Image (cartoon, rainbow, N blue to C red):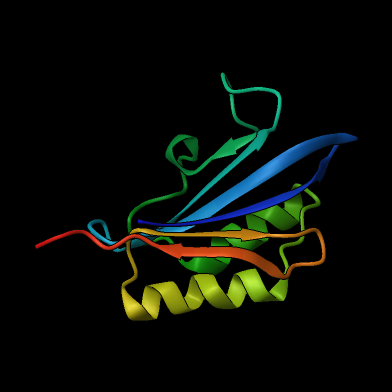
Amino acid sequence: MSTHLYTTTYRGRQAQVLMGWDRPLQCHTLVVRYTDQVERPIYCHREDPKVSRYTDFLYYVRRLTTLGIKLPRTMLRELALDALRNAGDREVTYDPAGRIVSDVEHRHAA
């Protein structure tokens, strides 16, 4: 699974957007949570009754928009590319300006 992490502000508190491509399930995932809270996320794709494995990537972008969260273009592009490349085991972190500050692809021995 690819994982993209972006830190932003939601309702005056620091929050993390964790979005990625799940290679085995062939779908995108999305979790938004406060950085100081691990129990209950602000949003989780698993708890959204409208989400199925066929949910369109843009559904998540629209869902973030309803929360008042805008992702950097770079992150959106990289997430779309992960799906096209069927990426897995990749971790990407973005700074507040949307620049990639860390991009690590984990390779497993065969």
